[in-house]
Length: 69
Image (cartoon, rainbow, N blue to C red; front, side, top):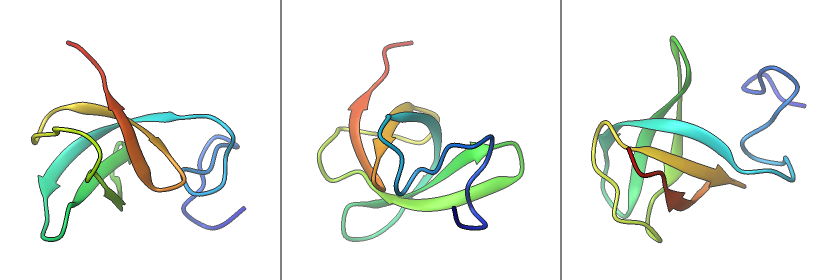
């Protein structure tokens, strides 16, 4: 696992989708997300309609779904 892995789950290489909160939308379909309090990572949100504050499910640095509130 890499340094950005937490709780034994890696957003990049795990076999599960990890829920994260969108902090800020970036250019080219990317977003800054909070993976845990105080830890942020860049992921693609090109496949989902995400906005800041949304919780998205991420697998291999790609948001694959948006959670309903």
